[in-house]
Image (cartoon, rainbow, N blue to C red):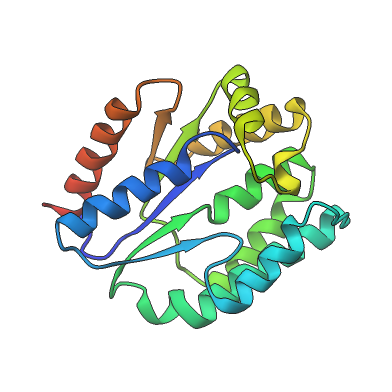
Length: 205
């Protein structure tokens, strides 16, 4: 039970994480429960500027540059939003610290210790209280990405990259008890029910 938890939705492209975060947002609104919502990269005004740089289709940053941009966006969120609202409001985040490990370490091969060290430097001792990891089959991933009208740079990797990232997420989840895997190949209504039930227990409502 947490009064003001940080609840994170993780997952690769097409996994349904943003959809389910939006559903939870609507659920909390109906319950008249106050919350903050962020996305990574993005969130604060400065982080959104960095997001535009990272996700532009024609951007071709080196993988280390990419990492430092993501961390810069996270630092802006920490300084302007997270630090002053931690343990004062429920914070919902669309991707957070584990996405950096999944994409930049497991997907791109950047040092895990470097990523962990940068997160520690930026966030101090702040960690998510609970994470919903949304997973998707590669068949459904390809189908969903094809249907997207607007695509960014991270929607255009090859299927093997997404497989490595999702496998990375699974490795992370095995070492973290505060994780729940949501299989987005299942019915949306079923997954909503699972998420709402878990959030109710986290908030004791």
